[in-house]
Length: 201
Image 1 (cartoon, helix red, strand yellow):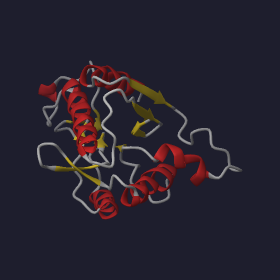
Image 2 (cartoon, one colour):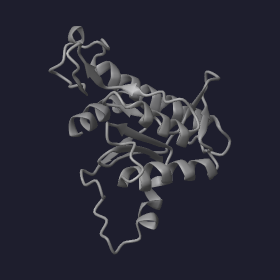
Image 3 (tube, helix red, strand yellow):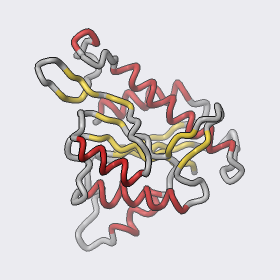
Image 4 (spheres, one colour):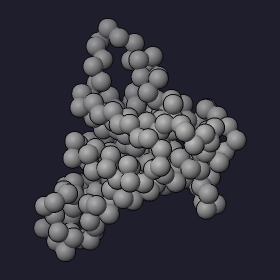
C-alpha cells in the first residue's frame, strides 16, 4: 500500500495545480477502539469528494469493517449530499464518486454485490497481474513486465489513469454550482488501509 500511496502522491502532484496533501493510515481500524462510536468517528472523513476502495479478493465482504463502515457508509452519504453520487464530467460523460481500484480478479458474486450496492456496473482501474499459469495478484511497480502480464498493463500507466480519473471527477464537481470553484482551495487526499478519499477543505 505504501508504494501505491507514494506513486499516486507523485502523480497527483504532477496532475493538479492545487496543493495536494495526503494522509496515509496503515491501521485498518483507524485507531478506533471498541468503546468509540465508529459511525460518528468516521463521519468527518466520509464527508469527502471521492472514495477509492482498493478491491481485493476479501474486500467485498458484508461482514468486513471496511465494507460496513467505509464503503457502505460513504455510499449512503454520497446519495444524500449536495454533490450527489454521480458527477457530470466536463466532457459530458458521467462518473461515480466511488472510483474502484482492483488488485485481484474478483469472484462473480463479489462483483454482483459491489454493483448491487452502487447501482452501476463496476468500472475499476486494474492493478491486476495475471499469467496463463493462474497467477492473480497485485501489479508491482518495478518488478513486473507488461509482456508477462495477460492484461498488458504498466504500473505507471495505471497510476496515471487513477490520477487523471480523480482530476476529472474533481473538475466535474467544480463546475457544479454547489461546489465552490475557488482556484486557491486545497484538495486533500486521505488514505487509510484500504481506501483513498479525496476531500476539499
